[in-house]
Length: 333
Image: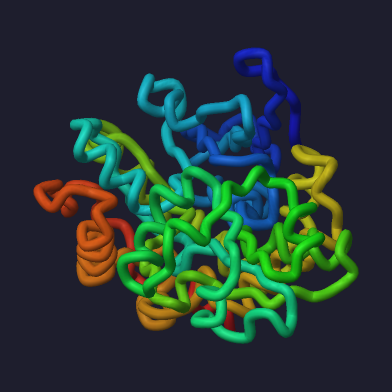
């Protein structure tokens, strides 16, 4: 079931799953996402909808993010238990600032960041170097610096992206940043053509994304809660991608009525097609896995690109304690 509350003047959906008997004792847990409800959050909604979290003793409330919502700040203030992280750069920054935030799982093994281009104008990653690229300020300061250092793109070919696709649609010699399930979908709908899509993860941008973050204090004082939430989320993601996602999608659409069925279907298709959650190490160790080797590889790339400092204790940004057990893999088959 679901209900609506208000947090700092912003409406959020408080989704609490299946009703339980009066004799049941569930631990209340809150999870803040980093954007409005969408298919890319589907596995978490799945575990609320089908009672997976409840099976190990949790009643989970999902608090959607958005332009005016900073759920990470709420976690730092002790008002929520878990937060959906973006990529490892956030985790490294927390270590640098002395903030005891720890990534306990990485749902996306590939970052869904893409560059889109007009068909015939860029048929390969290398071809993108010949285009003007619309890249937002955050992207310019992070992954685009890696594109410059590792692949020879230039600062001069970049123009600021204002999250308006009109300049891209009007000029075939422009490429545009995007999210795998967002800008490509928008271009097909508004531009009437299917763009060429280049996933930066496939070019070597090796960060995890859609991580589960919590405070070190939570790990120290309530490890059983962290274990249940992580394992429940992993099973939810297998069920969402390879089972029946309809109940989770209903919760997503209730929390975000603008998330249409066709957009959800597009997102699920693209996540599966590109191995966003289920590829690389997760094929052997399960969705959510974090490995030292992959974190170190990405850290070194960001140091080489001048994005972060080499003296950061990158191992303090995460733990592998709760992942890599192959949980839920049988649900795929």
